[in-house]
Every structure is written in C-alpha cells, then in structure tokens.
Image 1: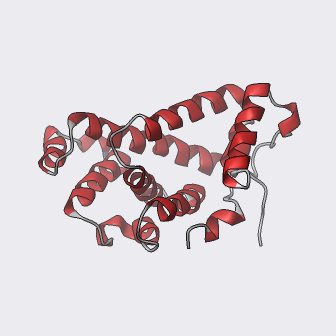
Image 2: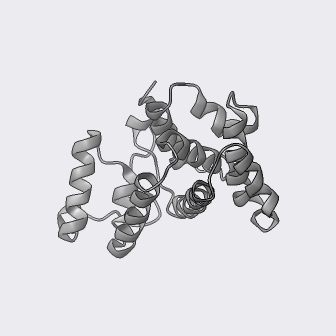
Image 3: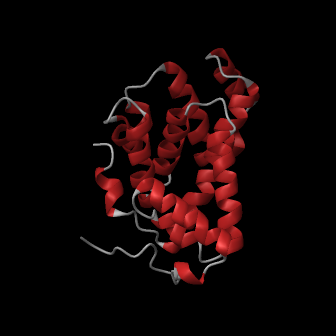
Length: 189
C-alpha cells in the first residue's frame, strides 16, 4: 500500500496534544468525512498555521459565487500543473463528489486543455493555470475574457484567490511530502 503517514518530512503531532480548537476541528472533519484527511494532521504541526490555512480555505469555498464544482476544478487544474500528488488525489475525489462527471478530475489532472469542459470553464482554468505558471503575464485581457463568459469581477477575484491559495498548498504539500489518504483514491468512483 505504500507509506500511510500524513507527511514524511516533519513530525505528525498527536491529536490529543493539540490545542482544543485545533483538536475539535480535526474531530469535526473526521466525523463528517468518516476519516481524518492527512492535510489536517500535517498542518496541525504548526497550530497557528493550521488555523489560518483552514480559515482561509473555508472563506474560499463558502464565501463565493463560484460553485463548489468550479472551485474544485480550479484546485485540480492548478494541482495538476504543480504535480501535487496530495491535492490531485484529495481534490480529485472532491471534484468527483461535487461534479456530475466521474472522469473530469482525471482529465483535469492530466491536462485541463484536453478536458471535456465548457468554453466558460476553459477560460476560468486558463486564468487559474496562467496565475500558476506565468503569473507576471496576466493582463486586463485575461479578466475581460472571463467577463465575456459571464464571470463577474468578484468571481474572477475568487478564481485567482483559489488558484493562489492552492499554489501555496501545493508547495507545502511538496515540502512536507504529504501523502493522500487511501480513502481519497476510491471516493466518488
């Protein structure tokens, strides 16, 4: 099965030794998901970072006009561009759960440009991946292209915020060598 540690390069704290608020958040997620996603255990290594990370994550998925499927599409396309094993697997599973197409996550991880998606979603992912691979080349035209597909400026901000956040997340997952839970591999299939 391979390594099942949440991460291999830093110590994983004992949940019982964590501050109460962090421990409660982990317990809530474990109850909701039926298992403890390894990202929770990895970020618990630095409780102040755990709090900030998950507070911003919550804002990105809860305070947006993007659908949860669109958020997960961005995460998977960005994580695919960054070769992030943890996020490809974990958020691929979430995309399978929130989307109507069980093959979409696999297409986006491999190369979103070849995925069976609408022109609107291709434009959305074009911006997200451009922010990932060539951020200094983003121009007003890129935003106007999304507006032409019906995105508001606020939604465009959210596309960028999700892409930027998951560039951070991908880099931390690489640094820590975060390992996806076995459950994510089969979830939503």
